[in-house]
Length: 312
Image 1 (cartoon, helix red, strand yellow):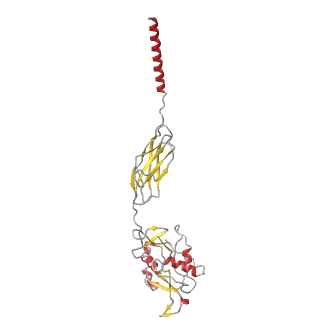
Image 2: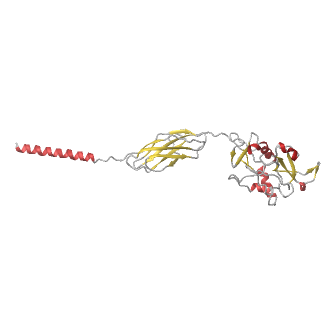
């Protein structure tokens, strides 16, 4: 009987110690790390080509978040594009750039730790369609003064192209003759020919200072492709001069030559002239003797105003 009681006591002590060992082990148990927990934030500041989104990481899952950011594309679940934004938990924000106008995009936040890369819920948004450019808008280094219409050179259906004027004249202290050489070098009056005219005039005349060379050397608004308007382009500029502004009272050179006819008699190329246009207000008609907007022609050696234009 004594032996039986002794055995029962030993067994009871063993069970008690085992239970205590299990209890202590449970208190020291460390769960393995898990993936991060995050959400994708709403898309804001949407334009035609940019937007802003981000995410909030509420838990790192017990392992440091080593990378976080956004993935996006033009179809659900896409990760065509990506951008990273720091590490760790918390809220982050990222700019989405290079987007296409009027396009739906799908964006997800992501977070990476040693266990996995996980994604927040997908959010979609559509970029806006900006208003079309209009006459008078500041654009492309100057101001728009003409939008190409069907039938115009440079017109493309469904696209917007036209002519931009610099916002100021070539300074009046420049020697602003047409060109210093006389003779027909082959220029045109038509819309869309001003750039070619300017190139022709530069290559045909060796004088240092003339309207074509002054315009060709111009850097304005970050652009260098300025040229002297043709006769018809200059007229478009006059018709919308109030949308551009800052014109002087007086006449402006075109890049279009005119044969030397005087009194109905042709005197040949040595008497070469060029077209210009009067930009003065009506109140100055008495002074200049011609109505504003009148296109005239005169000797290439006279100094007149110069306003550069470019195509967009």
